[in-house]
Image (cartoon, rainbow over all chains, first blue to last red):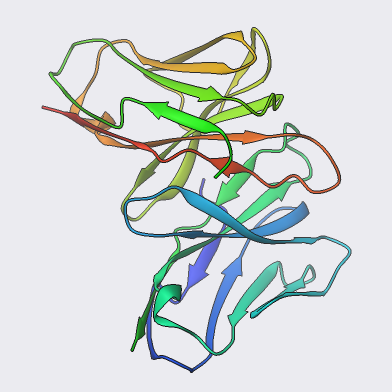
Length: 113
Length: 113
């Protein structure tokens, strides 16, 4: 069954605003990853947070992880039109092995210039 | 982009015909995966490989088979295509290490008519 669930499913903001996306998962994990997908393209890895980490930054990205609530959030600050894409969380299940990722259904972000 | 090439990029086939999709990598990564992406479902794992001739099933493996005779190539075969297999198929690779981010191909859009 699908593990990761993002919300909102769609988000529309003005350029310069911050965008926050949330993700929930169901099992114990090794790490939680976020990916971006531009229309018609493959997924691109953005950031990975390990299960023993609570917060991580990379450029304009900030990701948090709450293992007690089995949830994560991705914050994109000072958004740009080029950030328009779908964003997916993916959890690496600690019990599955083989570095399998379970993806959520994604958040479609539209940044209006 | 990581050295992953999927072929073909687009294919239309008739119900009941066999179809093979190819994933080729130049990164020498040990793990390779096939996912399908459908609206409302995100990405779901079909099969994966953890080495030459070593493969295992994922969440949605029914109707699909895979083969990996060389490190660089991972083939996905639909033995007898059905309309429910109309989807976008993505290949991904992972090299185990400290952080196991996945690198994705550009996808193959398959339509079964």
